[in-house]
Amino acid sequence: MKLALKEKVFSLREAFQVMDEEGNPVYEVIGKLLSVGHKLTVTGMEGQEVAYIHQKVLSLVPKYFIAVGGQEEVELKGHITLLKPHYTLEAGDGKWEIRGDFTAHEYEMKRGHDVVATVTKKWFSWGDTYLLDVPDDGDVLNALGVMLAIDCIESDTSRGVSQSIAEGTANN
Image (spheres, rainbow, N blue to C red):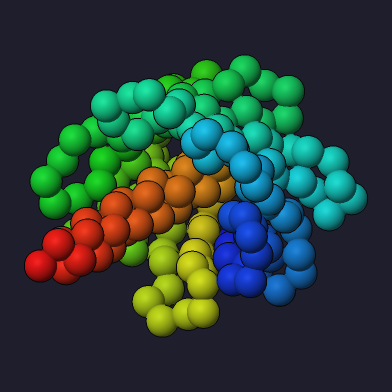
């Protein structure tokens, strides 16, 4: 299944529209407005909750928990790396390795040697836009949860860098 995730730009909270390859809306993602750490709810177009992603706030490395449709939560854990993003997902069906490229615009999710999903972030778009390709429909919601968590991590990282730069220029 191929999905496109498009961030809603004019929103007070994190929000995405998820569409299939024909452009039909499939899921909606809404973040909690005031919370400590990221909390995202994924709903189907009929309004039912299909997944919930939340951040473990006090952690040396990024950690997120993903709950999909009544299944036990799975843990996405970031690893300290210098150049390329690396995460692992401890899922009931085995450990996933998620690796990004140097620019953090291309990701590959693998279970053992099998590719679970690939992600491409568009370079020039109004708001973040991701293309998610998942060969097995049974992995779609976990892969979507992983991608949403990585987007949260990337937004925190870029916010931290821009805040550091702003503080550095204000002190000069």
